Image (cartoon, rainbow, N blue to C red; front, top):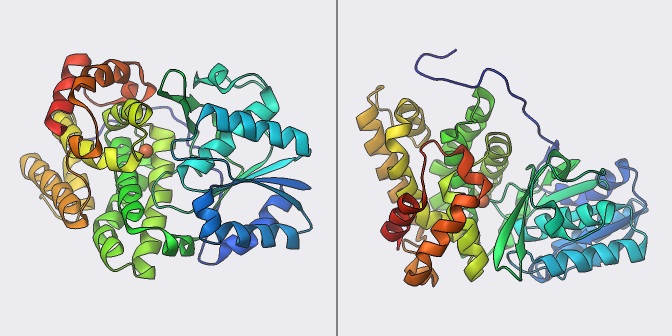
Length: 387
Ligand SMILES: [Fe+2]
């Protein structure tokens, strides 16, 4: 064991088959065919269709002699009703494989549709940990943003429209069979989405790194993601060069592998109820919360700070105090230079809802692996500072 670190003594590390490279979306048909599919339900959204990527996927699927049905009735923060409609379409069409193409919303919707297609019922029946009993149809997930990590993760986040909250579904069965990343898809992503989804990836990496369930394997991926984001986030947002965008796609993948296995923390526990109440973009919420949650966690993660400072591009020579300064300064700099939002108020969050958010966050699965305990009062203090 490395000096100064304490890891779990027993753990597992799971990832899907990973296919990564520019231009590879045009090979998605081969992937779906390899999984034994004949008729594909392609789950995507109108933005991805407009950008032309759904057509690239459809052509590839047809070239592989597969029938394709396109389901693009998915909105940001995917809803229970959309998942139910997608599952109905899957059954009605007699599909036997699912391809999710887009950001976290179409990919999480694809997972939800797969759950209902194989298990029936309502998506609410599967909220929580390991509540899925029947195996899902084969799934290929192709991200077109640089943050969600849904393409490698064991999570699906679906909005309950009645309760106005986000449900976290966690099960190894929702991880896809194949994750296919084509960094070229980031070329058409609007600037604000490059920024917000990159901060989602940074939050995944930092929360996985601080998690009480972190292992040496998840740390390797978390720190690799932080290094890539530290070098490429700002230039990717400002100049949009292919190399930097590719680094963000790579960072998203590494951060996804880290958090799917180490789980998350307070940023996500708070971001889920805020997203459920307001429908605000998940990555933007995370960008606002991350600096405040890092500050809250500092006393509980002292031994890990020098490595995180190194990930952010600066050596602290093992000095934890200097490392804590570096971590806070560098995260603040990334936010300021990229133009990410800095306050919940700017995102449209209402002050009178902060206590409700804090109460809901206590119930969120993500709070369980936070490095420092936080009850409703502590969470509300974090929210007030981020407001
Ligand atoms: Fe996230």
